[in-house]
Image (cartoon, rainbow, N blue to C red; front, side, top):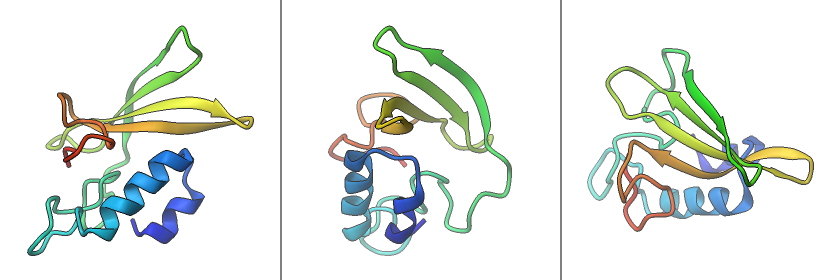
Length: 111
């Protein structure tokens, strides 16, 4: 996904800004200087070849909904914390896998 495509995604402004920041430093680049070998959301350089599957969706007491998505069998799950903003459900955090580096907002997020 390129930064132009994030505008159409149901992502909060802070998630879009973080994805754009990481993209601008080639964080998702598969070549020299890159950390991930593909896009954060699809975890692929070529797009999604298998339809993602929702593994769970849990409503939190604060009104947020945490959705766990299986992107493919060999890569970590993608967790999206969804919140209602201006009458739209938007992802306010994305996490790849688990642990302290899972969140997109961690200093060096998982791929």
